[in-house]
Length: 395
Image (cartoon, rainbow, N blue to C red; front, side, top):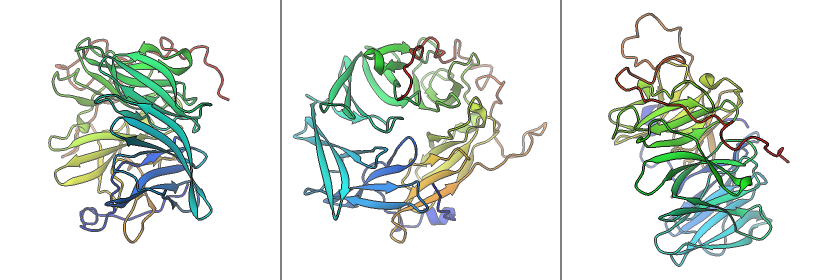
C-alpha cells in the first residue's frame, strides 16, 4: 500500500470548510487492505469502501435503496465486502453485507439480533482473520458475543460472559483470543481474555492493583506491546501506560503521554516488530478545544512527537505499515480519498540532562513513572495462564 504524502501545517489543519468529516468512524481491516465509513451528508448517507493496498487509494460508494442512518455501523472484510449494522425500531439490529455489483450495490441480508430496553449491539473491531465479524451486546449483568458474519446460519451466539463488558482488542492473529474490559457488579473495570474456541472461557489479563480500573486499549500480537489506561498510579485519574504481554516488568506510565489540556488516545501500533515491543511506533489522537492532531511515539523514546493533522484527516483512523509508515485516511473536497504518510522522527542519543522543553519518558528498564506512584503486581497475566495453549493452527 502506497501512502499519498500530504504536506501539512497547523494552519492547514484548522482551515474551515476543507475537511469532509464523516458522521461515524472509519474502520480498517486488520491487514490494512480495506477501509469503510459513512459518506455523504444530512439525509443522504451511504456506505463507502476504500481500497488502501493498491498503487493509489480509491473509494467505491455502496448506496442502497434507502439512505443510512447516522448511527449505522460499518466493518470492512478482507474480501472487499462491507458489513452493515443498522438499528431498526429502536431495539432490533440487522446485519447485511454490501458489495459492488456493476453500477449498483449488492446486499446479502444476514439476519438480526434483538436488544431489549436500553441495550445496544456494537460491532467489535475487525477480526484478524478478515472473514469473521463479531458483535457485543452488553446487558446489566452479562454480555453476549455474537458471530454476525462468517458463520453458517446468520447471527450465532458464541459466548455469554458474566459482567458488563466494553472495549474489544484482539490478542492473536487467528481471531481466537479477544480482550474485553469487564465490570462485575460495582467492582472495578478489569481487562480479561476471552477464548472464543472454548465457549467464551474467561481468564484474567490485567490486575495492576485490586481496586484500580485497568482497561486495554490496543495490543500488537507480533511484539506483545499493550497500551493500557489505568488509575493505578493516581487513583481517580486515569493515565496512559504500556506493558508487554507475558512480561515480568511492570506497566509503565510515561510522563510524556500526559497532557494537561488535551486527551490522548492511542489508535494504531506498528506491526511486524517481533519480540521488539520498545521499537514499535504508536499513533495517538490528541484532542483539545483547539481541535485534533497526531502524536507519534515509541516506548523506547523520550518524548511524544506532536504533528499537525493532515487536511481532512478522519480523526482517530489510521494504520502502520511494518516499515514504520503511518497512513492516515483523509477526505477533502479537492481530494475525497487520500492517504497521508507520517513516520516517527529519529531521536538523538539521550544526554545526561534532559533537553530544555523535553519531557522524558521512563526507559525500558525504568519504573512506572515515579517513586510515589508504584502500583504493585503491575504486570499483565502471561498468556501461558490465559487460554492460548493447545491453540488450533490457523486455517
